[in-house]
Image (cartoon, rainbow, N blue to C red; front, side):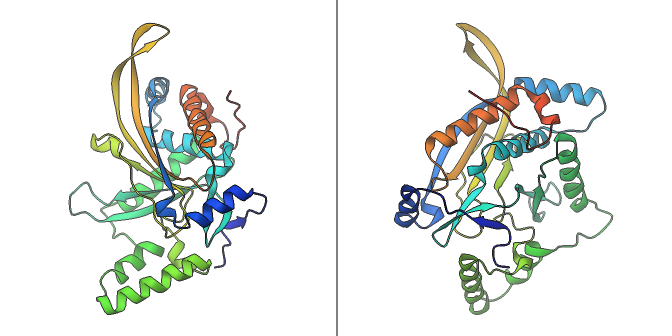
Length: 284
């Protein structure tokens, strides 16, 4: 597999290249951004959908909003590998799902591809199918791709595992990693999402890795009622912490901040989630 998942970017400026050369590892190039997203309108929207019998969750909606944001802010879908800048060919959101809600339950990596014509309904169905597919207690979970390889490799002795991991990291850097290892590998995605709100936790900052091509990792905190000042008046709004680590080499701070404004605009106008993922959204 020679980077058939990406296209080389050649029209970026010298500052980008120097930033890549000065800090070649992704793990030392990440920046941290934390915001409290106002999800008041989104929660009202989800409540209306629930009353209609639609089983759309908060995580489904946030995943859809993130996907639409990436389509509107395409630099977010870039990554650096082997000192070169690339565009992902697809918008893939990855996350980890536990087979059961138990401390010792296994975790599986899941990737959901967001196509241009997807919307909240189709994305919700994609997530539901994948998650409930692994939680179906009536059948044994069939592990594929990276999930299966992790199981096999992780149980090998040091003298086998360590050199193999070194070889895989070198192949990853050169873009020749076998497709089977990239399949269902959350580190091969546009963004890694973690829904900590379901555990009644706030958002945290989680490191991004040099392996793979995911340039961002975001965590979603619990939705809480908080008092805010709007136009000089106190008002109780539903807020949600959103913590994200981003590879600073793919874009500048202005681009990242405007991307967060785009995400907030979508959440303020949740009906936009019903449109196609690549729908153009103009935010001042």
